[in-house]
Length: 551
Image (cartoon, rainbow, N blue to C red; front, side, top):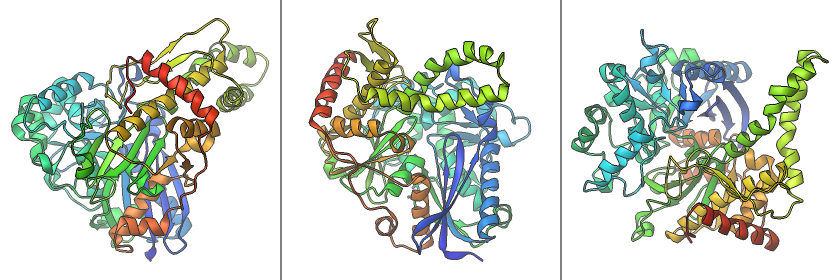
């Protein structure tokens, strides 16, 4: 039987889905189950050189069912009383009138355009530029609270699809964010015009804003493309804040997930926003999720941002992250991706040259193990060596995936400057680290200049849990004490908090956070020497990028 004290946070990341079951009486996560996206892992439907990254909805359904099968095996069937889902965003898919992604319908199973367009899909860069031009030319200007539109976001992807795919124009009745699709599916909503749309995605990606009149007017969307106006007509508003109960599981899904039909399903959210809640975000806190990219989140309100043009610095949305606030979001398009790229560069000779030499001497499985172990050891070794180096004069720009903030520019590119023949791999690693930290500082300075006041910074994610050098550099670069969240699945923890509130265990998200989140304690403090190093690197970073200090 479902137990009132067990709730599940379901986190759909880029590579896998995680289900974390929380016992609210302990309180603690008592079980974590992770299942990968199998087609995605095989590289299906993706063309990286064209910036095309698509995911089949079957990956999501199969991972969800497999994860809850394991939950039932460990905790018993019908053990969870409520669940909430977060997902990457903007990750939309075209649907029929029932809200079924087209890739689940006959004839479209292998069409990448009919699948979920992952957040990191940048095929819509030109469409994003057009969205920015059209929106900013009208009054009200729907770029007021989000700034220049990104190819990672909702309307740009839909416009690009409608422009380039006759299938989409002919068969797509609407589009749905991944973070909205599953909550509606699980509760049996089969009319896409009645789908719950979550406030996080609606505000930050679809640009819903009550001050500007709600949804972008159909006439403006018609100017972009009639397909966009059609999508807007099927987009139910107002959106639902995270923590809103939507209903209970259908009989079919209760059976497939081995849960009770009385299990409450709560409105979805974006993964990073759930992570901010799981980390303990409150007013005056900056939560920085550091992974392949970064998402910097904070809570504010209209009086605080009044008189500041924030478009170059961040986006804010109503009832985002925590209901009742403006949820603010900035971030870098690459952080961990910068070091992953460098790893690929350094390890190419291993696969291109060394593997053949080793396999002539050793069994292939031994070679696989040796090379895998070497790859795992590479970045930690570079970090240890870099911690003993002094500045070299190399300047790097971190825009390897374009630039999100400040001044969003999908076309911006990375660079390495001032290279000399005496520099080595460690020097380059150190320069890339300073570039990543400089990108973080540029955002922090811009937000502070726009009226934000941060009393504490919380770092979240595997990159910061595994690298003391990165954490210390961020403390030095931001000039403030920082805490590293010890919660490994912090996004799922945030969704569990949303689930607990939706189930009625707690009256509000802040109340649930006080009961469930870890207490703040600074782990890294700025040092004078470190701050001096980063100050010098930051000045060179701004000059190399043709920019000025935002503070």
